[in-house]
Length: 189
Image (cartoon, rainbow, N blue to C red):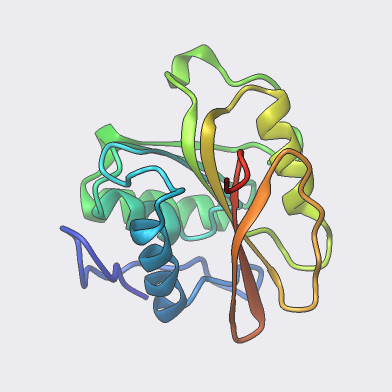
């Protein structure tokens, strides 16, 4: 696994050991960022404030930082995954641009004031089949974690049809067993 674009391109990433984490493939990640960078309904990556929920290795948030995002908050419960994220942050020397929270993404509560402004780009890659993405998207809205023009990229199993109140589907892509929904707070006009 590696960073596929931006200033850190081709830098290696470590993934948590075991089978509890399912990292997004390099190819899928590259395609996802192509959509993000070319969609007029998506905020610019340059200077973006990113939150990576169910972060795993942190590959999605780290890719965003490589491509110009200003800050990324990684939210992950699994200890091995948090260790991999810390190792990746250390290797890429991104300490001043990141924070790592041990928190259940379905129980976010209010956004802490010490995290600064709300986030405008959200990545969610929860375990498939448990409907965790929609629950987390609702908590992001309830807790004022995101801006009014935020975009969320939700990865689910290819057979899943999540309902995402408050978020509007802009694009849906399939990558093998994964389906990726690109969601905006406001619908296309």
